[in-house]
Length: 76
Image 1 (cartoon, rainbow, N blue to C red):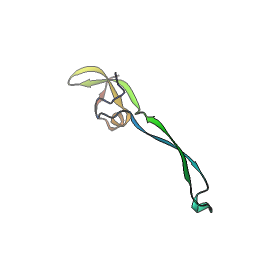
Image 2 (cartoon, rainbow, N blue to C red):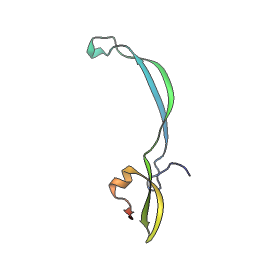
Image 3 (tube, rainbow, N blue to C red):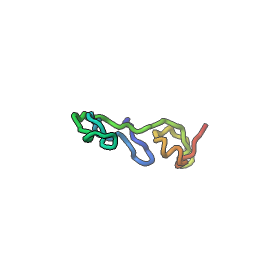
Image 4 (tube, rainbow, N blue to C red):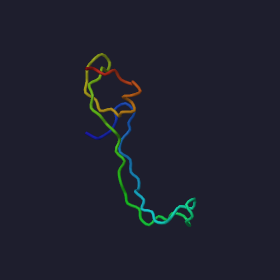
């Protein structure tokens, strides 16, 4: 199964890690220059929890943002 929240659909996104060189302008330099870009993945914080969905108890994968917002009822 994929690392995707079953409530909001949040999953893995892609981006870049930037390598910089130089001194910032506010510290007296000529500015930061980007010298390299490396692809990377930003993974969502997905947890498995038992939840009450439509009166039945199921194990679902849910992101912590939905968990803290109280979008599902947690079963202990």
